[in-house]
Image (cartoon, rainbow, N blue to C red; front, side):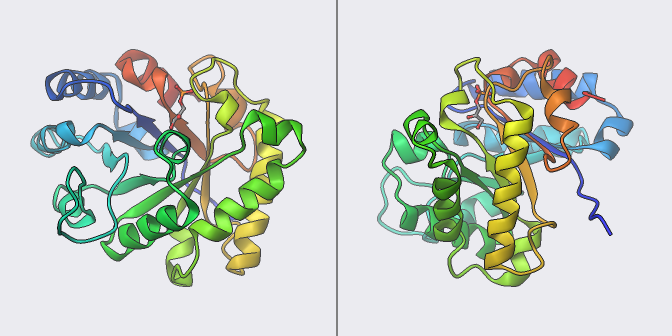
Length: 256
Ligand code: 13P
């Protein structure tokens, strides 16, 4: 029997919006969405650290059922790690999701496989859910390495993860060449890579491949979201630039 997976659409605001601007965006977004939308789709926003507390307060005060996500975290509880934010601090802010291994973290900030894995383990240990990002560069794609790259990112990222936690995980397939370029992947191509992602998760954690939710990310906008969501293996989107505009992000959430 086919597993029913709840769609999840998340906005990754990256290094954008002051906490005041972030409040306005989330309020406007909430004016455009209603119960039907939240019932159909889990909606997540991932603001910068400086806006997490403000957004948490707005969501709680106005009872807005948007989930809070963080874009990164350190793996230790506390200590001499200047400039870092711990999973304990995030969990206290009612953060539900933490993006781990985003391509900008991997490629701009040099996060290696072991680092991403430590973060995944720490996020789970603190009762939050990682959104584990995987995806190939254009050179890797041209060299026919897409599947092997994604496979090794998964097997490294999920090392030592408790099998019981795996079905609740979210994986985001974000081809690096599609991020912020306006050049989205072909939905059928993305669906094919995502089938490999499920197969790899299943070989690592038998029975979990059909359970994990897998998002597509890379130049998603209101004009192309439906073509991704109609693919059988795609459960949602991780949206960058288009999630900064609350009206556009609401149109993406209401893709149906
Ligand atoms: P864009 O939607 O701006 O291409 O960014 C995608 C992304 O990196 C989301 O994490």
